Length: 379
Image (cartoon, rainbow, N blue to C red):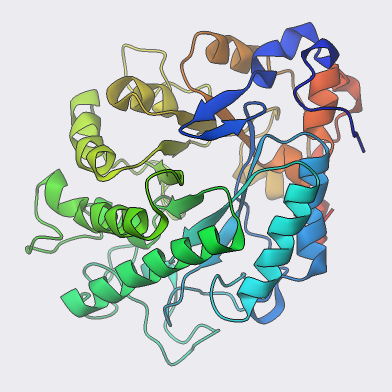
């Protein structure tokens, strides 16, 4: 482990200098541009994060990660989870999260919880609450099947309140901000997507204003709960867990229309999830999704997607597959020209808690490759 000051510019290898410059977002200053991406680990029995989870996050803070975004943590709603070992963010589980914050801060790190509701990704009868039906804007799953009734306005209000309460608890516990999971086909994203949102009321329809209304109301409620100086990040994506070619928007103009009401609502950071950060989002421009979002909103953005790896996301989970590390020169070039502000690292950091420290020192040959075995323990 490294106890060297994370902001010590003289210790940074010249080729990665842009990754190790501070960034201020409101009153929060990050020591560098490296973010630990949220990755579901399912190591919290009955939803309770234990000392092993706290140490898992502390190791990344000790080794120079600028900001940690936790794995998805489910809000206080009976159908928010589809795995009993995914951590809860309510009730007795908050004591475990208090320990996580304490450990990360003791190591000099910063940390946001990612607040999550899985929506229609949940199957009927799934634990931890098998009696609770999955919910979604129209009761339609990601394959287009009608599974349950559409959410009532009372259902929607209960979800908004649960997000708001979780954010208030995060601030009370000492977290440095919060992230709302609005990507990958989960509940908030199901409202964004025409395929799963067929409502004709004010939470749907053909307008972006309707399909973004739930997110807008969650963000406003969260802002009301945490005050003006507590950063709110929103994770967004085009792709879904069941459909990698899905598109919320087809053009920059549609993206601008999608982002405008959400930005006005008070998002401080957009976390733009792609499977390969180097791929352009629209024809005629090299900008990736994070680049477009930054150019359209002026808000800081986080890019993510196969950083430092040579294997496509899903293929890397095949048994026996070794996902070799690669240089990140192209990423650095994009960061230097301010295409985006922060870089979220997933599988590389999952396999190697010292990734940020090794990158800072130019120890590229010492980076550990990702294998599926890394998923079996909290390294």
